[in-house]
Amino acid sequence: MDIQKIYEDSHLISPGDSLLVALSGGKDSVFLLHSLIECRAELGIKKIGVAHINHRLRGEESDGDEAFCRELCSFLKIPFYAERVNVKQLALLEKSSLEETGRRVRYSVLSRFASLYGYNKIATAHTLDDQAETIIFRLAKGCGWDGIKGIRDVRGNIIRPLLRVDAPSLLEWLKSRGIDFRMDQTNNVTTFDRNLIRHKVLPALERINPRYREAFLRFRTLTEESSALLSSFVEDMVRERFKADDSGYVLNIRGLSLMQAKAAVRAVIRDVFHFTLSFHDMGLLEEMLLRGKSGKRLTLSKDLTVHLNYQSLYFNPPEGFFSMDTFPLSRGMNDIPAYGISVYVEGVEAYPFQIGDNEYLIPEKECDKATLCARTRRRGDLFVPSGGKRKKIKKYLNDLKIPRVARDNVIMIADKNRIWAIVDVREGEGVNEPGQEPYIRIRVKGRDAT
Image (tube, rainbow, N blue to C red):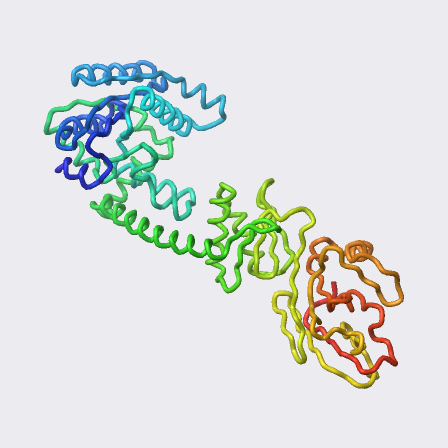
């Protein structure tokens, strides 16, 4: 194994870097430390130091690990920094798992040591075997696209230069140089999820394919490339379709497939609202998009509401927000698929013998044909029902006990001067009255009564 070439090909270490190595005393971190020292001059490393965190989980064995690391650094003549943390007690206080608490503590201490003692990068000893374990673990838990990519080579100032090194090669390198390391007995306990994968799943994979580690490496590379391509596409799509206006954050989903719309929503929620949608919430969102019912609202968290308005999604619309769609009407058939209706417009000279449901006769002399439209309600709308008194649309619909979502979805026949009818609800004053010939005859079809 040419470890120098592996380090050079990773492009994670630059001349002049000061590296703080996370050393547990186990084979992986001992290999990392010795190999970096061996390649120090060729890589142009300015300074190497070691940090050890004693989790105090295994009593004397944990103290033995710390003593081993301290003696090793003394022998190698490199700086050694250590900290003891009662991870078990901390996990109980935080109601978190030992693994998660230990991970958080490690990175917190490493970051503090690096800042305090002048190291610009922190090197951890995650290997190709760790990568395989992580991918299997995340797949078993039900991860998304990002989870499949596994452990990242770099995160901030943390680098993982051994992600292309497998355990057998690493052990052979240590053995060839007679280098000792510590054995962590908890690694043999299969009650921890990752240990179960390490001792049960990975050996089974090796029987299926002795070169499974290389297969995982190829899989991760292909996943990263595909993810980068998808991310670029989604970024371009969101850049073109997402904006902030007086109604809040708006995503135009016109013409998008369901898959494209979901990808755009995920990106908006991740980048603007800084959280990840659960599988359950994504299912609810998908159902809303499939139904395509304008006026539908979906609460995704205490801080986020999504409102579907025709072919736009509004994120956190202001209080009192409602759809403001307008569909100009011309002679003949006017299809409005977003609201599940068709509006037929024609001129008639005489009052018809029979008037059907959702059919409206508007005196032509009073109608402004240029602005005749089907639309949703607007703030401040007024309506005079046939034989009734003028009221605000909001109050009129509220008095009829029409639910909020249904009110947002109500379609009206109107022009610039007045509302002539509320579809499925009531015709307005002057509509369907005899003796007002000629008429504009409007017939609305395709939607059940509200």
